[in-house]
Amino acid sequence: MDNKRTCKNNLTILLQILTIKSTKYIFYNPSHKDSNMKKLGKFFFFSFLLISLTLAGFLNQTPVMAETQESSFLKMASWNIRILSNSRTDDELRKIGNVAQKFDFISIVELRDEQVLKRLVAILRNEFGKIYQYELSLPVGGVQKELYAFLYNTDYVHVVMPGKLFDDSAFFRKPYYATFRSRNFDFTVIVNHIVWGNSVTERRKEINRLSVVYQTIQDADPHENDVLIVGDFNREPDDDLAWGPLRSLTGMINLFQLPEKSMIWDTNLYDNIWFQSHHVREYSLDKGIVRFDETDFGNDDTSASKAVSDHRPVWALFNINGPDDD
Image 1 (cartoon, helix red, strand yellow):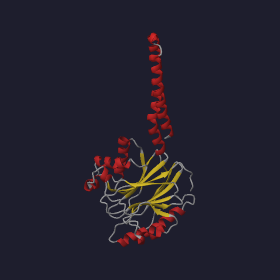
Image 2 (cartoon, helix red, strand yellow):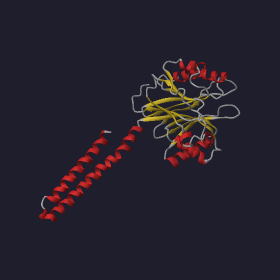
Image 3 (cartoon, helix red, strand yellow):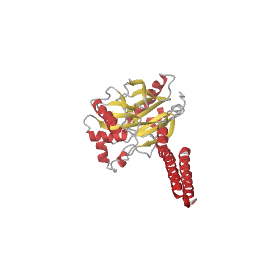
Image 4 (cartoon, one colour):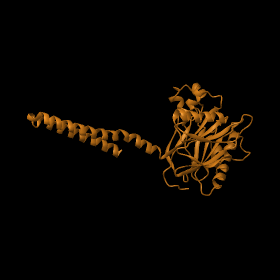
């Protein structure tokens, strides 16, 4: 901002000098008009050159500053993209891509096949100019299989430990996790899609088990404590019977609270991001829920759900230029 203000002040000073000097050349000696006009012409030429260079710096300052600020942070999201399968049309994938390209890293839930993910990556490259790669899980679930994916912008993120499923029969869909690095920020993400089942009891049972998943993965690497657990939990964060065990871990927080809503109908807050605040100190305190159903579909929830999803992505911003604390 100081550089921007300096450029603006320089412009003002140059314009003032130009006004004073041009007046002097015109009125100083009327009997030498031709000589005065030649001097005035030279003065205008060099003044125009200086002003152009200064103005160029002024105009370019904002994009450079924005790019620098943007490159200092990682925008991480979690998103249940409703029935993301190869049956999706290109137009639907463009709409999904328009939302996805806002993020550097996305944990995707409810993916049905790899083909659609390849098409989405191609659209992000060809139409949005961004290069993404992904880590993909093996199929999980019952008769209707799903996959998890970690989709990441290669300009910011690379894989440290490839993804794997957490082998625990307590889950209808086993959690999936991997470790990544974005500059100085290395982190492990665990993504889940909690069972809906036939009762709240079934959902609470799986969520109760997440504390074991979290601690087991964290303890597996004594040098890596930056662990986040994300996804579609099918329960809101105020259900203490579900979240008690995970919330009892030291410093554990969830970023989104009621009355915020992650469902496009504004009915529920099922999607969230959890981590231990004393470990994940890279969190910038900036977070949000993208209400694409309102901005892109004029609050037409039926159209938004059909073309994109019935879930909104939740996101958080992390500093990637600070010290690597753990």
